[in-house]
Length: 404
Image 1 (tube, rainbow, N blue to C red):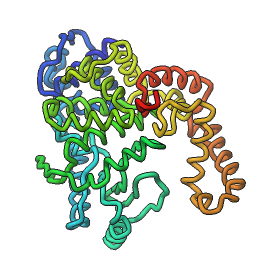
Image 2 (cartoon, rainbow, N blue to C red):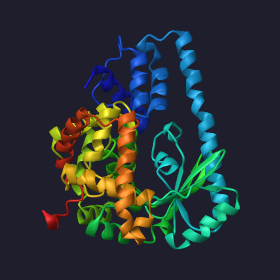
Image 3 (tube, rainbow, N blue to C red):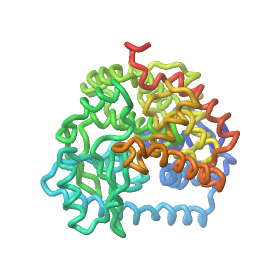
């Protein structure tokens, strides 16, 4: 871990939790541009900008530099307004139909400064039994249905809005763990509470379901392209704010049932060690594993964007976390190919004879993307995949106790 990364972790901790970071880090002589660059790569840019302004004198910033930072802090205001507007439009179209916001503002509500959480599009969960009716409602309101085959959501777009309507949460595994997860979330959209932030009012999942959603989503990306500090911040803020609430007993029981409890322990202790969030008694984990997880996060950056070649190795690790690390790299590559074929050419599900046509064609399409560099799969990707897998195997993702 570099000095710049240590500073970024300390500054993010202060902003995220609203209290002084543990273990003082000296800012004397630090390069604010390098700090901002690392924060940007980790999708915590605006937390870092506010921290830089707060510690401007310690960093030796001139008044002109402070002014530039102040102007930069205002940039996401327009994005927040756009997201809030898109969310309000979604709520208007939904009418009396139940929904909950996934991630996004629902995660931001646990931050000390919610507006600092970087926003993207609007993800929301609906009652899957209403999917057809709701699809018709959004189309009638002028939303374009992308009609993309996807495991868990439908995408609707307008020029000023991008919505992902989920009929189930992301990161649900295969097999018995998947069956148990779907049973757990059955009716979750009705277990919700109202959240009022400065620029938005919406329904969020009750903490029991929100915690499970965060963990499933985090492992889903971690075991594929990779995650950045933003994902850790979502979990750290949630644990820190809710650690003494009674729902944890039920959440831990569920995590043990599907084989995600070890993952929860490691990620919670990692957040405690490097971001200063709470560490409940159940969250004891090996510090070496936590260190390796933190190194993995800092090396890859948000969705692996710091190193696309390294990120591409995720294609060989796990099919978006669907089976943890329980499948060999060659077999996982094959399952990734067949899954991609089924998503792009759904006719193969009804007419198996078409596999002989579309599977080779999809393989050629992906090979072309590798050759053109659209997918940065290189020999180093394989080596990186093996290194990352050696870390993830210690997390025992979806390894249920009755299977160990």
